[in-house]
Image (tube, rainbow, N blue to C red):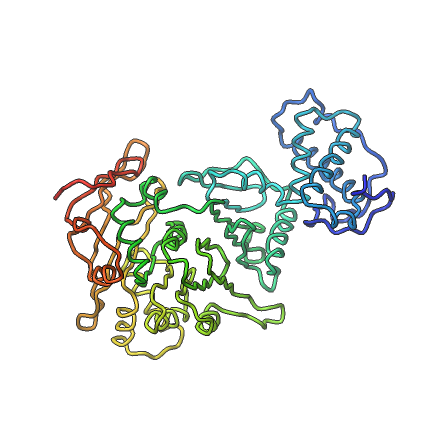
Length: 491
């Protein structure tokens, strides 16, 4: 097979991903000959591996992987299409498994082949979880304690890394693919996977029990607002208003706690940006999946090992103003870039959007003030609040409720200043009334009967809004989170 070298000694090859080693002190030593399979792995053993059998299985997997590395011919590897490489590598792994004196059962052999393929081309044990579309978060506390979130609930996963060194190798592989680094001088990092999933990793000495990592996943197919309505995040009236506001170039701030769905909502709203507008996105770790053809994506850069070369979000905001954007979208404001964003919204970049971590609408506005103050700007509070009130038109508050359901709990319009305070009123709001038998939040959406001032701007751009859209009423939401999109008259 042209893909593999016939040399007996170790070949100088570079795998698509760094192989792991079982014994750091003897990692380069090649096995002289196939060794008998431990009795724990013979076909008579139960398919459910106990701790000892799992260790023996891991040792065999390392040995097979090392033999595979020796047989790879890197020059031919680079010349072949990826699918061909994977197919031929799998054939060789099968041969290596069968060379283990036939002691592997067919079930164990298939599992071993899959795991060696995952170590060679993917992210090891994580591949099983990444292929599960129902998982939204992967939380690794240490190499043998891994949790996942499915449908809003946390549960322990039935996988583990071999040890802390194995987990660290996977972290290095992830951050290396996006040109970032993690070491003792820089023990925290934000990165992303190829599918856009957001990764945060932290290692010793900051992480006391060994490397830890969290992965926030995003579906391969971006959710639409219709999907959020079907899942009960909000009723159709909210979608009608927000989609019209985006088209009419209203500036929108999406607020919420961790895991409340801010980024998902931002992605959904971006669908309504007209395709002939130029959009520039700015993020710490790129995760937005905008659905427009004319998008420029910018990402911050951490300092290098000498502490130089850092590019912050504020640097990118200043630079993107020279790139002739129609709209600017910041993944999340955290510090001084908040003022630059507000200024951009006030100086011709209407229709811009961003997110912020806050538990309520009022908290979100207060956090903006604090961010600007902490950045060293000596701006009178009244002038600062006037800047916020004139830049923002709509604040959308998202929340994660009892049972794990994510909902839009408030849509608020900023209407200006009254005295020294920012004036605002709620257009829509969700009120939780209790929980059902499954522990899921139930409640009602209230339409408060207030016609937003921005409706004049929306209608002036030829975007019609139904006259009854803002009629005061309540919309019941059932225990599954879905509701009657047409609404029901109520108190």
